[in-house]
Length: 319
Ligand SMILES: *Cc1c(COP(=O)(O)O)cnc(C)c1O
Image (cartoon, rainbow, N blue to C red; front, side, top):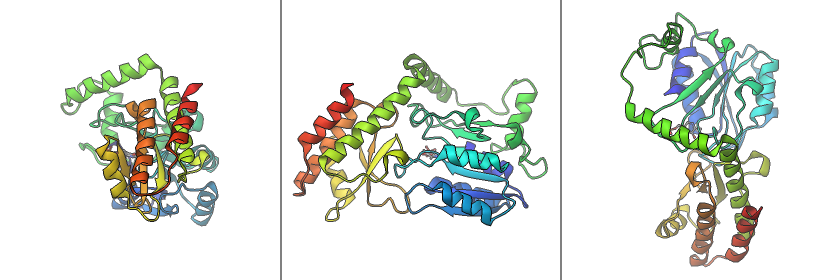
């Protein structure tokens, strides 16, 4: 909802936006901008791959007058992470407002909104933070407020940022509508858990789960989809071996009680996702997922060194 509210509130005829697409989420954001009359340049990465800073630079050079740039930080759909730091620096150097979908990445990847100079960052509690799915939140800079047009932006709407601004400026009193209290209790519980563990530890737990999964899969004999520096720390992906289908592998893993899923969106159809997001970012999930994958390959009469994979995961958790 926060993502759609941002797009709806800044979109207007005459606004030029560069929309980076690395999953269905980015594609939806572009449609919402276009619905509001904005002129949207779509920059799609290779299917299920991260965008490159060179491609962003070229796209900005080719379309003068871009005032806003939108992208997803880390993808849970395909297991990639976009080069946010470089893109943010480039946008800042050209005075372009940045909009970042950090719904999945918050808690899994470091996200220093102020240091990166991100104008709008949208987050949700339901991924790496291990919280409820019914809420979303955003931060917005003074520069980004200038893009929210008084004439075109909706009012008296769940998608209105101006309504939120009015609420903040009038002293944060009664909300314009009744909120769902259970969602807020669940959010509070999730944030209490984060506070108790410490955000640094939550981040390290994701980094380690990612490292361990990658080391395990490599030792197993699998080829990783993303490189070390462009991998999402939320899910790890591999391509299903040529003679197999993702669904037969997933069926075997599911039988074993493991949460293996297929990729989401164009180009990700043959990807298998090892989910280590939020409460799943821990040793037993990683070990179970990778060894279950190895077992599935054995059942399909394909080689997989489960022993070496287990050793590699254990080593990643030893230090
Ligand atoms: C999960 C996710 C969202 C939000 O989707 P929900 O279906 O509401 O959970 C938005 N953007 C990204 C990149 C996500 O991974």
